[in-house]
Image 1 (cartoon, rainbow, N blue to C red):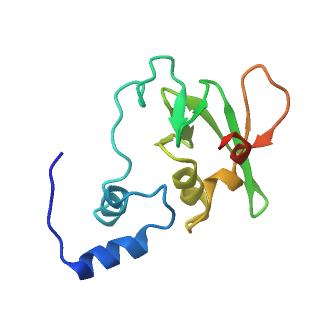
Image 2 (cartoon, one colour; image 1 turned 90 degrees about the vertical axis):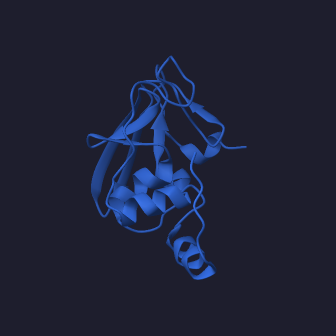
Length: 129
């Protein structure tokens, strides 16, 4: 991985744009440069099964995600080692939520999920330790 040097004012400006801890400096720069989400080639997070691992929490492939925002329902699914929502791939719940709200939001309290072969939905924050 390449390293770049920046001055303190640039660092402060980038830090302010990190809306949650899930958003990295790289994410901020990709957004500023209009590069979009990184390209993915197959499963990520070291998972060959298609499970999605984020912040130490594993969501099995096929886990359904849902949320309501301003009266509109949104749905996603875990496939290929990531959360897929509206044709886009996300590596964090917060980034997926921010793609909907266009503002800072804690994805762990925004999303509910239903694990494969389960009938009940629950906020994903219950899976964090």
